[in-house]
Length: 471
Image 1 (tube, rainbow, N blue to C red):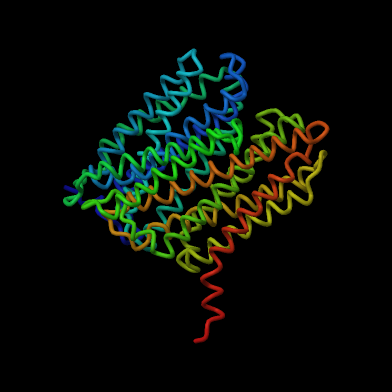
Image 2 (cartoon, rainbow, N blue to C red):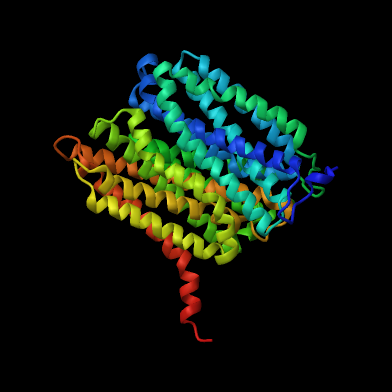
């Protein structure tokens, strides 16, 4: 039974308990962002102590992506069927345990395994937190406001992780794994107290075949994408993995058409606004995370910046998102999600183009890097909340976990695919040039810019068709 003062909110006055529920959800998103960025900064130290090669090191990041991206849709739907509170709390407990284990292991394989388990846990906490939020705050101004606050914590976690990662790594890389543990435990206790109990779906059913084909197909897809740059895109094993993943996903769609209680209601994909939101998040995450990856290499390996100096150089993006996202809800109310997403992807595209044409081996920070960083911050602040609102608008409460998992899966798949292509292009640029320099990133920057522009074109297309069609 839902507690009275945590019933769906419609107005601007929220009870202390309602604020508490939002705080729990925000802290979990903050920890997700914090974890990803801190571990990225600590990778060189981890490799030195555990004797891991560059190929092995990438799996500390990709192991998390594999678990997270492969199970997001299942995580969201499981929350709808078994109860959001139950799934959220169990997954958060697993996240804390995996963090603790990762901080004490002395073996690279075990460390990668702990990262996979952590990604698996996040695949359940992320869509479940989103669906708790969207069912607690009713569609409209209240939900827009809550989602804008939610976005602040995600960006703040990522930007804070860059700084904390630089500081903690100097004391020992294990602290980057152990630091989130007490916060996860405290949040778990607060969640047990504050999050209202909910009932599993009355008409749930179990789609075993759908779950098996979806999870195996998604895991194999993400694994193939992240391992292809090292193995080779035309390697027989890579091509065979892609073919098998495609067959599994095709089997999933076939199974969903016949299932009495499908894991994913396929008709949700026919809603134009929801489909465009999912494509937009692929363009946003795919281009943004790939650009951040390039900047990390460029600033540290080419320009010789320290991890802390690099973090401070990129910090304006997180600051702009942190201070700008709270206003996103009001802007959505005034202009609508479509115009906000257009403004976001336009800002991203200009930021990438600016760096592409003004970059050099000896850039002036205030002239080349800072303008791009600012434009990316503006784009993220305008776009992330708008996409999340559009992706869950008009969806029944019983399927909010599905909608949340779908849009977050799209973001992770977009990030994994574009990042894999970006990594391959950077490697080719490095092999074909005399020494490291800005030139090795040129092709990858063109790719990232093209991805953002493609997302912009897809978002603008319906408005253009409406404008030119006869009335």
